Length: 75
Image 1 (cartoon, rainbow, N blue to C red):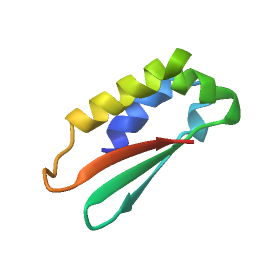
Image 2: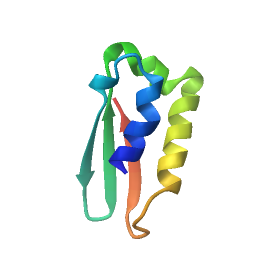
Image 3: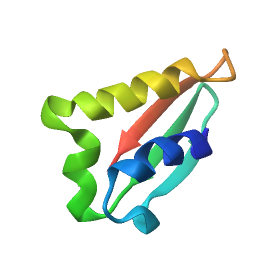
């Protein structure tokens, strides 16, 4: 899942070397924290959050474990 998030976000940003995805797993959910360069935050979020919503939709659709919810946190 981390590779999927990185492959979606990397072409969108000017500083692909600063894209970092960390995973936090809890009992009922998995949270992915996406961190990008400060200059690229607007590109990842998009106008009115449209790009962020689209990224989340793809990630949620690709989830592998039906028992745990998946969340994507963009920082």
